[in-house]
Length: 75
Image (cartoon, rainbow, N blue to C red; front, side, top):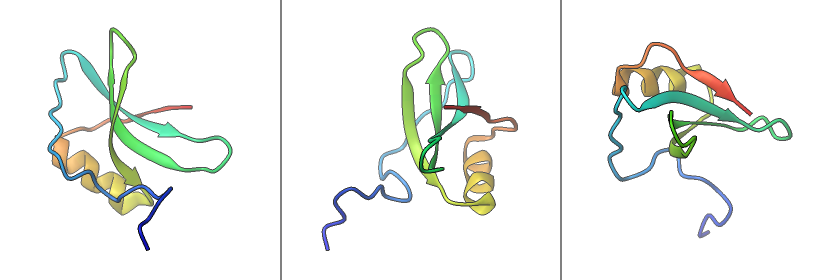
């Protein structure tokens, strides 16, 4: 009913992407296989979650929205 423990498909707030200080990454869970797209700060390593990736269509949408060509996987 309330969706506790579930992640929304997309965050409602706008996320800005600065290619000079961030890189696009997929944070992947080894245990569950869950993939979350977001941006990782190059200097601090801090990850900012943008959206849950459930398939190729979601990944394509993420790349188009932020103008990203390459997405690195991190575990």
